[in-house]
Amino acid sequence: YVMIIVKGSVPMSFGGTQQPTAYGELTSIGGLNPDTNKKLSAAIAAILESKLSVPKSRFFLKFYDTKASNLNLLSRVYGSNIGWNGSTL
Image (tube, rainbow, N blue to C red):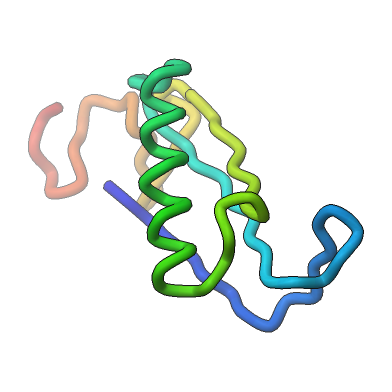
């Protein structure tokens, strides 16, 4: 599952200026490590630069590696035995 929220026109200052900038948080159920984080950062920065004109030098990304049991959707915890469509996980 991937969820992306983009909110424009938010007053932000980065490096002492208000030039275009971005802040993001990426949460994953496992799979994050320094090499993966570097690749994800580069890919996301390229998209921000080409689509939103945010230079990669003005983009901050925070990574969270979490357990499935820390996430909930539709009143069901990812670590539970019942899937989103009622199937057994």
